[in-house]
Image (tube, rainbow, N blue to C red):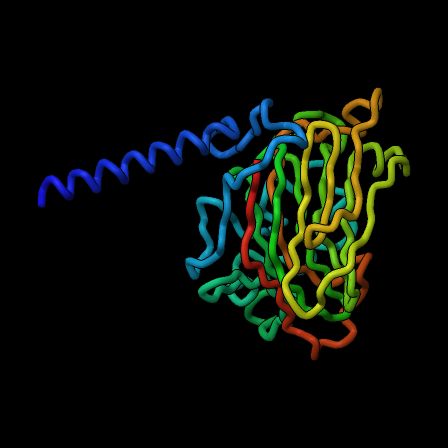
Length: 296
């Protein structure tokens, strides 16, 4: 019996070691949480393999991987470079303390927009929203990130899946943003967009920075970006919507995408783009996320 137990333990150990070796083959781990893809795998001919995932099936947020978004307390969001984003008002109702805006079932995380029923004793804002981000806990450089999510619809709704630079290594310029999904109101399509100093500050429109793709408004969709050293390829349900290329000679203003980025997932309400919540009876609204997967 002891020999059988020892044999089983040995096999398990070997499998664990083998898995670890395969896992490390794809990337180098920087500062304990940033997965930087190995140079040998940074090409289109390499078959990417799954290296990181979260299925949100624990019934609670994995705080080793994620934090609740609260724009007003996170130092990441106080830098002058990021002030332009606050002007859009996307964050006006975000909260990290109300547990009704981030909930779980056995298979999913729900990021919600709700009517705030306690504006006197609690938060004075009329509505509250929830979101999560992986800053300082999970980031990566190059690879394909996929997110499976289902989106409710309401006027004033603005769910988003996007990525920002982890370290902001280029001073006095925008360090880039990949908008993997943004959907407005009752639209039957989603936007996929690239932002950088080139497009935001210098107002350059070439190469084209965004496109839209049709979505299943009643079910789940898979939103993704495949990130190479020389281009970003966006897709919805495996159908490519737009490729944003690196422009020769344009420098870091146009291509700051040579550094690790972290992920944000949030359900927002109102702002300059979606407009007002015109029918509060459409709330609460849910952004249901099944899983996040990274391939390198």
